[in-house]
Image (cartoon, rainbow, N blue to C red; front, top):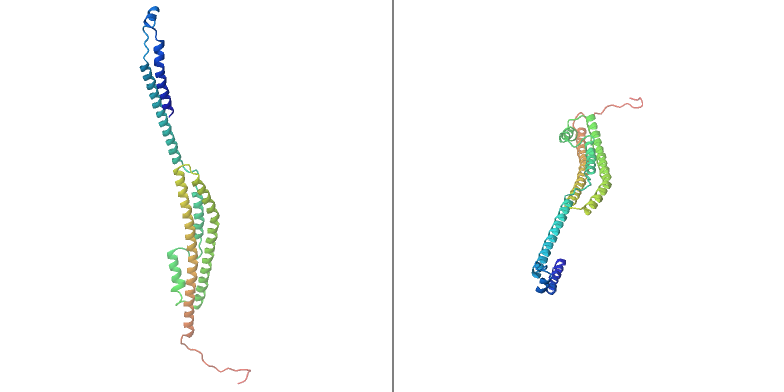
Length: 258
């Protein structure tokens, strides 16, 4: 808009300058009087106006090129912002939380999370080892199953305590990541903050999975103990009612009399 105003002003100035130049141009007599000193100078108003217009057009092109360079520079700045990496990572904290919970699962007592160990334990203490066991062995088996149940509930409580302890760290990490996401200067920082929020949710799911596994293990061991106790009770009742010599009456002497 400013260039158009300058352009119009220059055209108007050239039109005003034409009669002025004509008015001050020397007459032939004056030219002869001064010995032809002005005879070699010819002023063309139209040519002068065209030169001014050409200069104005050149100035406008230069301004357009400057504006284009400014736009390209702004675009490069925006691209640099979009490619800027997020200067914060909660990955280490999340990994430590998962490792603590995993370590507690690895410290499970007695019957742990191993398929072959579970099969052996159930074959010996919960299923096949009751019918052919002697009375002392039945007593030892009942005590072992009770200890397995107690250990399972203890492990479940430890995992619950660990998960509850992770809540405060999870809250702090979530607040930090949300703040970083809202204050992100570019698309990359916002995407990285979003990815870390997803990782935080994965850590919470891992804690929930571990908690459910520990609680389910404890409940399964207790239910298996109850089932085995019922089977043992039936076996002991069968042995008590099994036919045999039974009771045989005998003569009893009391108070030293015949």
